[in-house]
Length: 88
Image (tube, rainbow, N blue to C red; front, side):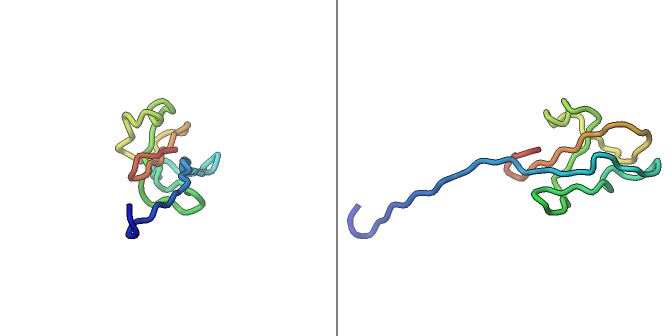
């Protein structure tokens, strides 16, 4: 390579983002799912969140809720996905 080149190395770790939400969220009917406080890697998540009525849909990223108004009590799943496709 001659005198004008140099070689270096880098260690790459692959890790998923960490999504944190409260285990229970008390609210009124009509409130928005987006009002649920969610953090990703200890920072408030302001984008990249989608909401689902089943865990399998959230895992597969299919059938996200388009109306975020809460009309009934129950369990909802929140998916966070980075621009490069990592999700939790």
